[in-house]
Length: 409
Image (cartoon, rainbow, N blue to C red; front, side, top):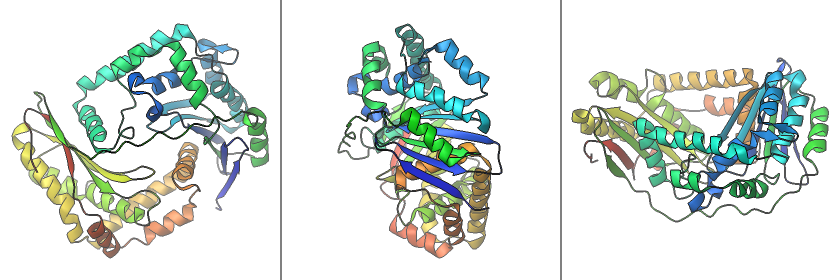
């Protein structure tokens, strides 16, 4: 089945992506808006997430209850999230109801009421989310690892801080939304049973006359990664590891993706078999490739009983480093099968396609054809991955631990 992806950038900087999936009767839309937590001031950390929540508590002529009722009556499966550079709004529903849903989302984006009476409930939820980290050691160590590894503001936690959330006023929210929720650089991605000319015409009517603001990108502060230890009496010592890798646009991206798969995907992966199964040092252990726009990293997590924690760290680092010594063809075959299976499943999901196309446009300025991804995965070889690992070895590791006592590499 031929892939059919359309692209149009409006005069105000909004890019519309549309992928027709004729075999489905649903549709999904995602909006990627340059209003993430990197745009917050230091004294208002958490303002981006707070603003996003308030945007969905009333828009146009609808109050909070009426807005929720309108979306629920269309059967919309909603999602909202805040990242470092962008906030994301998503909706999945029957394709026949997409035009009505887009009318509502135009109000959410352009005409949110940002009601003052909703500020305290929104603030309360944000504070609870921040405080929940105290009961989530895994989340806590990974938040701290990212903050220490990536330079500010890239390493910020989207939750913000209690002080920042408590300090935010309704005027702060309204000013932030007015300045940052705008069409310049926005990506709107739609996938499913769509008619491109009709979709493009509706978006032109709803968002085409929206004026863009000239908002500079946040400055990336110079810093060097630094590990550390947070002392806390826990049943398990939490361990986070980060080290440099490649971006999505790098020629070695698929080699890096294959290497991480050998390390961490499935119960035949090296970390699972050589650390968890062979030595019983942990229950959870994993590694992921985390590419940002201008840099990439391998991020690892594991946790084990304090008396075994040093050995757990040592054996994990050993597996990371020895990957460059060689990869078996059977290992790579399993990874390639998993990647191709995931690719096929993405073709079945309108939400996955809308999100993937949006991410491609953000990182690459184009949408990767599925055939291109398939060919890149098929072309992976053990020799190519080992060559990549020798050029991008597991070195300059940043290690963050949380537990009764510090560990050393």
